Structures are given as C-alpha cells and as structure tokens.
Length: 284
Length: 330
Image (tube, rainbow over all chains, first blue to last red; front, side):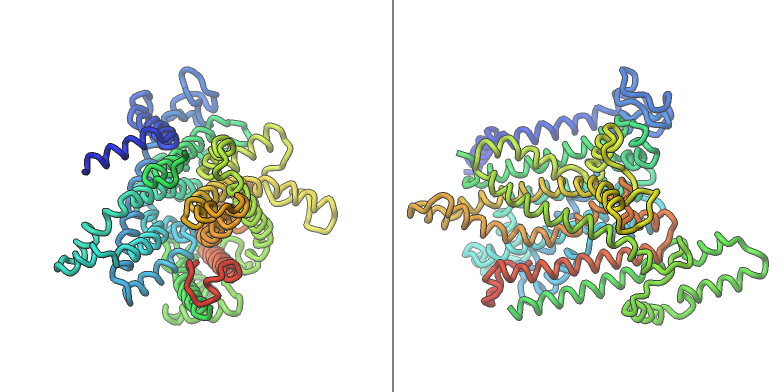
C-alpha cells in the first residue's frame, strides 16, 4: 500500500514542470554552495586584487572597491543564506506546529490564550522587533540571526495548522485513538500530523524562503552577522560604498539575483508540490 | 458582528500594550545608554561630569525608579511627547517623525493599494488561461521572490544612473525648499517614482500569484462544478470564484503589512528617501534610541490602524461576519 502511494507521488512529481524547474534551480545553487569554496583561492574578506575591476577570467564576478573577490563572497554568502533558511525556516515551522497543534487539539481556554498570542505576534511588524534585538547584540552570528528570525516567523504557521487540526480532531479515527487511552502527544503525532504531512512540507518551504528574504533585509540594514559574509551584507556594502553611482553592477547584481532565484525556485516548487499532492489542482 | 469587533478590539489593545512595553525598553536596556552617548560627545571636564550626567538624566527622565519611568512614559505618550532626539539634540522626536511621515504615506498607500488591486485583477484574469499562465506568471514568481532592496538598486542603477531619467537620492531636489510650486511638485514626483515602482512591482507579483492560486482552488470546488453542471456561463462561475477568492486576499493584506513596511524601509535606504525607514537607519547608526523608539511606535500604530481599517472593510465584503457567524477571522 505504502509503496503504491509512493510510486504515485513520484509519478506525478516527475511529470510536474513547476516542481522540476524549481528543483533544478535549487540544486544548482546547493551544488554551487558546496563546490564554490574549492573554485576560489581566496577568503571572502581578503584583499586580493585591483579595486573595482569588471568580471574577467581571473575574477569571475569582478572585485569590490576594496579589491575583494566578489565571486568568493558570493559562494560563501550562499552558504549563509541556506543556513538561515534551514535553521530559521525550521524553527519557524516547529514553533508554529507546537502552538498550532496544541491550540487546535486542546481547544477551550488553552486555544483562546494561544490564539490571542498568535494574533498579537502576527500584527506586530516582525522586522521592527528583529531590528531591536539585532541592535541589542554587539556580536551576531548567522546562527543567532536564524534563531531570532525563526522565533518571529511562526504565527501564520500556527494559525493554519490550528485550523487544520480543528477539522481533524473530531474525526472517528482520532476519537478512537483517544478512547483507547493514547496520550495526547501520541495522538497528535501518530493520528493527526501524518494526515497533513504534505501541508507541513509546503509550510516549511515557504518558511525557508521567507527566512532567506528577512535575513537579507536585516543584513542590508547592517544588522546582519558581524563575523561572516552574507548576500544581504554584500548588497549593504555595495550601496554603502557607492557601487550604484560608480556603476559597479557586478558587485550588487549577483547576490540579489541568487536570492531571487533561490526564493523564486522555492515558491515555484511549492505550487508544483501542491499540484502533486492535490489532484484537483493538476492541469489537465 | 459585535462579537467579531469585541475580539478584534481586545487583540488590538493587548498588542498595543505589549508593543509599547517593548518600545519603552528600547532606550533603557540597550547597550550604550543615551546619556553616555551625549557625555562622550560633549567631552568631559573634571568635576563637571557629575553635574552633566545628572542634567542629561533629568532631561531624558532617567533619574526616577524604573516603574515610575514606565508610568511617565505612558503619560507622555498620550500627550504626544516621545522624548528628545539624541542624534539631533535637542529636537523633539515627534517633530522629526512628523517631517518624515508624509513621505511614508505618499509612498506606501499608493504602492499597497494599487499593487493589491492590480495584482488581484491580473491573477484572476490569468488563472486557468494556459497562455498567460505559462508566460507571465513565471514573471510574477520572480517578482515576488525579489528582495525589495535589490529591485530598488536595479531600478536606481539602470533608470537613474545608466539612463539618467530619474534622480536616485532624496525626497525632492536638494536645491529646493518645500513650497507649492509646479517645479517642486514635479521634483517630488520624480523622486517618488522609483521607490514607488520597486515596492509596487514586488507586491504586484505576490498578489497576482496568490490570486491565481486561490481562483484555481475555487474553480475546483464543488459549488463551481455544480454551477457548471447546471450550465451556468463561464463568466458567472468565475465571478463567484472571485468573490470567494478575494476574502483570503483581504486577510493576506492585513498579514502582509508588516512585510511591506520592512520593504519600504530598505527601499528608502537605497534611495535615501526621507521617510521613517531612513530615519531608523540613522537612529541605529547614531545609537539614537529615543528616535528608534519613536519610529517603532509609529510603525506599530500605522500597522494597527491599517489592520483595523481592513477589519472594517472585511465586514462589508464577507456577509458571514455580519450575521454573527464567525466567518474567516482576519
């Protein structure tokens, strides 16, 4: 039975162009992240060549006004973006699941409190809070940044999962599990969660993309990691040191293009997966 | 409907309380206390430090116990007094922010509303139409995945520097003082266009994609198939689908405000556009926590008010909220 279902999933997955395109783009950047550091002899912050030279065979993406190699910064920045996506998106999804499952399964006063909390965090502009936290920390790493991003990104996940749990918890098979004396946690994870596995995967993909974008925004304001390079930080430096006016386009185009491609690929994949999981949405 | 608004109000009040409390903590618990910043700037003479320290503490109201500071903060808030800026000492924060707010309203209101209407219209139009779906929607995905500052930089560099059509810094020409002449309004609009365009484009992509997906969900719902089976014209079915699909988009607009504000912030930074976003950057760089506090409070207030307007709009659009059924709560 399980095998058949899996085959069906792959059958439709391999025929979905959106999913395929998204995966190919994503894989390209993942491979570049791992291979990139071996393609360059420099460290991201090293001053390695003449200032502000356009892309050439020696410096693939040119150099900054300080003579740093843009390609080196780019591949190391990619790593930072993926880390933020995995950690930040992961924490956001997990927290959302925790709150959503608890609120939806328990109901009553617990739901009331958690739902109010969710709505409050939902309304407060995330970036304003992140700004304050980031300004507060003197030394910031990518890990810390991701944790904070995850901690502010959970509300809409919680809301969506709560709604789904509500509709599932009164089904017969859940009642049966409860009647047989199963613990609440076990009911949630063995009876309810498996029924929305596909949905949780979609949520994680969206959270991943969202975390990458928020991190880029924070880094761009200069509140990103203080001890590493990131794509947002590259754009920050470019604007700060007049890349726009001096026309050093090779400095700010690659980082933004990479973020756009990665996040765009995730979004396209998301819609593609949705079509794979939900037969109604497939194009005939 | 009463229940709907009562719930909303409770959440707004709690949010406001929490936000103001976080806000109050900014200048007090952050590294680099404002008094020390000013002291360092003034330089110190032996013997005078003590007096200066007391003097500045008094100005900022930091010489009383914390609980009293908290109450005083609320009192001052209702008088519209947000303290004094450290960055442009001794100008009141409220005044600095009031100079910036018109620029934000000018930028955000048209960008949010126009992108929402245009995006939804276009998304509904493109759904299930093979040609549009395959050609223009990929563009929507690219746009919505674009970081705001990157699109802003691309526009500034291409249209501003390479082609030199638009100015790329400031809210109006540096050689002018604000007045009601055509020349000034023209300069204002020229400076406004690129920041507006970059905000509009990113959001437009997002709404179009969202609407397209929503319409497809609705067109595959039972009621649509039922209508089709009855032989209803395609146009009518799509109209019903649109009416249902627009609801989550309204909720989405409320949820998205925070993100748009963040986008406006970085866009303003790229264009040195003199709104709140640009002020925040200045405040962070100069460690002017009172200014940061004021900006944060204004953003919260703006988002809360906008949310409230959307909630009211929702009652008009979704009949379920009027009849006491909860409907989809925004």
